[in-house]
Length: 209
Image 1 (cartoon, rainbow, N blue to C red):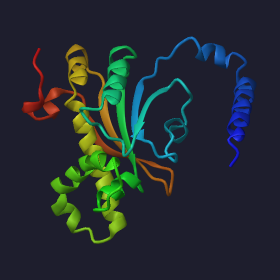
Image 2 (cartoon, rainbow, N blue to C red):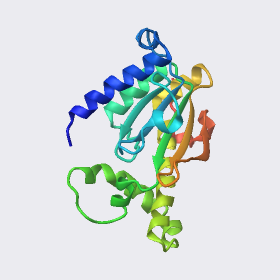
Image 3 (cartoon, one colour):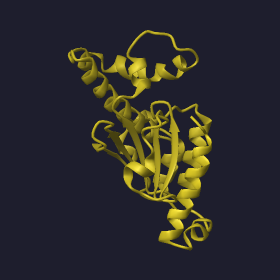
Image 4 (cartoon, helix red, strand yellow):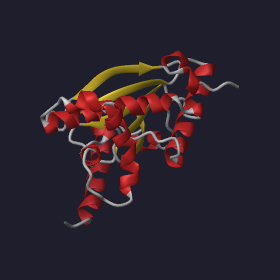
C-alpha cells in the first residue's frame, strides 16, 4: 500500500479543519491543556481521540502493548510525570479493548520473543484470578474477562506510583479510571473502578514524605 496516501490524507485533514475554523491550527499551536491522560493499547484500531469524539489537544496519550502500567517503564513514568505535574490532568484513564492480541497471547504458552517478558505481567493477572477464569469455558469470553481484570490491575498499579500519590497530597486529582473498548460495537464500557486517594490501596504501597 502506498504510504503517500498518508501525506495526502494530512492535506485533506488540514483542509477540513480550516474549513471549520480558519484559526484552528494557530490556536492549537499556542499550547495544550488536556484534562485527561489516556493509557491505551498500541492496537491501531483503538485511537483515543476518534473513539471518544474529541479533538487534538483534549487528551494526552500514552500507548503500549496491552495498556500496561509497569513500574520500571521509564517512558510511561515520564508521561505520567509530565501530565500530572505540568499539564495538571484531572483524570487518568486506562483503556483496554476486547480482542486484545497481547492479552490473548498471555493466555497461552507460545513463545513470541522479547515481548514474552512484557506479557508476563498479564500472566500474573491470570494466575491471581485463575479460579475465576478457569470456570469460563468459552475461550473468547475468558479472554474478555482477562482484558477487564488486566485493566483493573493496571489502574491499581497507577495508584502505587509515587508521582500520583504526591499529586493526591496536594489536591484531589488525578482520578484514576478503568475502561474497555469494544471493537465489535464501538462502545466503551466503564468498569466502575475509581481511585482518587490513598485509602483505596493497601497500606504497604503508601509513600510517606
